[in-house]
Image 1 (tube, rainbow, N blue to C red):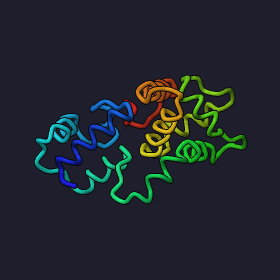
Image 2 (image 1 turned 60 degrees about the vertical axis):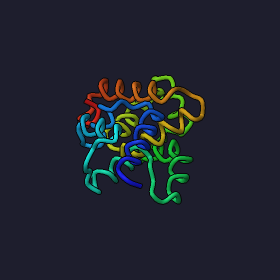
Image 3 (image 1 turned 135 degrees about the vertical axis):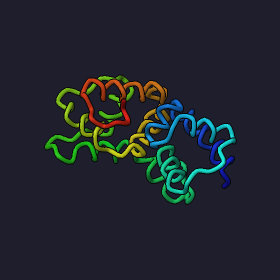
Length: 161
């Protein structure tokens, strides 16, 4: 895979996930201009670490062995990650419904705050994709719900700004 191929694939994945160039840039710690240049095939260089981080965020894998496991169980993995400090877990089904509706389940506000503040964005992205594939809601709308929750919960995590 060369940089031009990565740009084409990145754009395709970003759009499938319902992310804007600005959101993708924030999640990856890159500028929107860098994302634009990459996607248009005019970027001259992108360091390996930055490329790998971008690929991780967008769910692009060099080895296919990992993608299925993460992608197919993302809602479960994210719900468990959001529940580690709480007696009552946030179930994958509750999470899927919450992502689709934008409504936080009763008694699960702390779980959602943990998800917003601590769960790796690549895992959140995989959960968004899984929820969208399940027919719950378009990815873009799910990202809007996550951004709204981050705003309401006053998340200190800079990626949500």
